[in-house]
Image 1 (cartoon, rainbow, N blue to C red):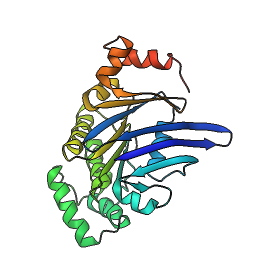
Image 2 (cartoon, rainbow, N blue to C red; image 1 turned 120 degrees about the horizontal axis):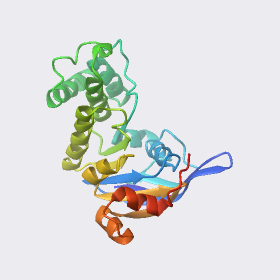
Image 3 (tube, helix red, strand yellow; image 1 turned 90 degrees about the horizontal axis):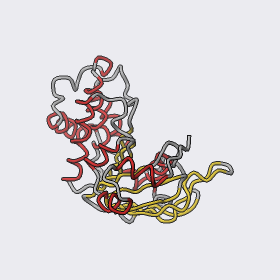
Length: 243
């Protein structure tokens, strides 16, 4: 289980995440929703140990993020949207193996796992070619493989389909659903309400860093009297932008 308890993050005098508490269970996809600046990415970065926690707690499978960040990192895979951050002069295999080594895997273990992932994601024809020659969709598959090479139990997705065409976005969506089948703990942020409806079991909605709702999508629609999730979301946050 992923558990956030009274989580806070402040930058100077500004509180970006304010007393946030929720959980995500195994085999569950939870959508983290909020307008730009609501604190979604900050929350994901604290869970992944990339940002220090100001106040509160995060527990990943009962491991405390503050007291044992190295152990937590081995439990977590994270996939960001936008630029996938690969090294163009290295092959796909070398990119993935670099991260596998960071997770403590030796080259033999890493290559066996990479061969398995290359077969699963149909990358065998190009896995050993320089990434600079890849299409956007091919790069995205390498990015996915990089995020799960260490077989994490928790997956964090921060707007992973941003800027992708329909085919590449579908690859990501299928991967997220596969993570659910594998009983992983999944926290997913997105600006696309259609994507959220397609993938998520439950929605955690935050506004100006504070928790507004934590419930199933059907309950959310029923509570606010609208089958359109986007309209429900706008009603909830008051239609205000935080940019």
